[in-house]
Length: 534
Image (tube, rainbow, N blue to C red; front, side):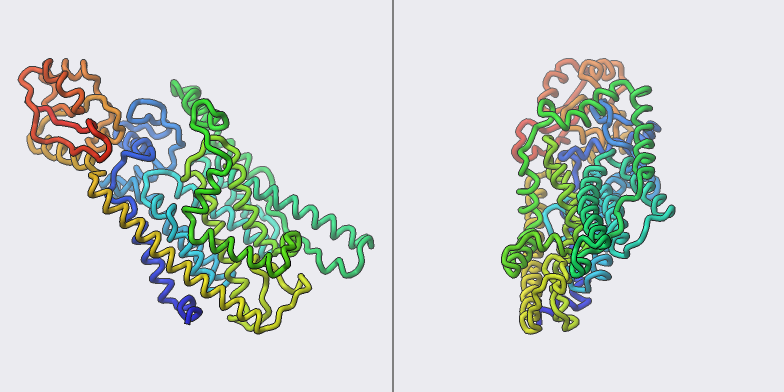
């Protein structure tokens, strides 16, 4: 019954529908007040309003630190949809849907329908993916591009194909896109895994050479497999970096403060502990175990069961693991290790290793579901061919093992739906209850009233960066300048914080407080805003 459920096409459609629904609702009510969303949203807003297409500023007029590609996409979407909320969030949502579909198709074609379903469920039903799917950030688009590059390498290894000029051009294009989304961070998620795989490959090549030279016995040749290199050559990596450095050079030359804000503070300071808050080495590991549950538990459980069946001989697993599975392991662990070594950490930055982990889990599921699907002898739980191990379990034991895999997978799928769905719905309910979108509602009401009366309004400088975007202004105005503009008759309305409003009222002529004010968000007393009118 469990197997029939997991291999039913309707189950795939249900999991996809639930995942995409969670993607859509996870960040409701939509607002820009956390996770630096306002900074990212402001880049495309400034492009449309002021024509700054290469270099932008933050709402507080600091230099924007991210390359502009996602901002370009949002600006293009705004010209079509005329809605900033949609334009800001569609890039991440489309990237999330594309990742889910690509993961399912890749895992299903390689490991079977059940493995594809589990890969889809693992990506869509965790605490990271729904949160990032409509967040106004660059993490999801970057993850999509990194996944496309990693899968290209995976297919090269799986099919034992050499790199061709067309492949290198495609790799260059993907790397350039990643560079223009978030800079050289793409290297941290791919190059360590490539280096680990090349080290393993070079050892196998040397072993094969010894066998050919007659150093080893004849039986040793069967344990040596020549593997195609995941390395494409230097030029796609260097050429894409050159494009990014061209953008950086232009910023240093033509944008005041670019070197200090982008090069020194945003990039170099990440490797120190003075500017950005450092976190311990195990920070990402613990968060992945938690936020990728129950899939992280399932992966560890399957691996431990495999080790137990092999009497805890860890070296045999790595020696006999299939090359494409070993690449998925290198890809995931390489990114995790390098990102953990960087002192400055935040949970969303590790998200690009989630898709390869989903594909690795699919490989584990697919190899162990083989006896139930084809009646063949089970391969190991880590994608290792049991024919190479010397251990040949009988068919009944193999089928019993894959039966447990189906049951564990179904249980993990059920727990993921309950856990992720329940958590997401509770966050949405608390968001509306705690007035998380108070500033967004206030901004819409101010714009509506100003439009109906044809009033000119300004926003007095405030700490909330999203306030400018809610009111569709490109600059704050300082309190003294606000007083001058008001008394000169150039402004009809002022938006000010409840802390600054009393001082302004004493200096403004014929001013009155409107009934329109923002609700205070829970836990932020004194953070409200009022509208001052004539």
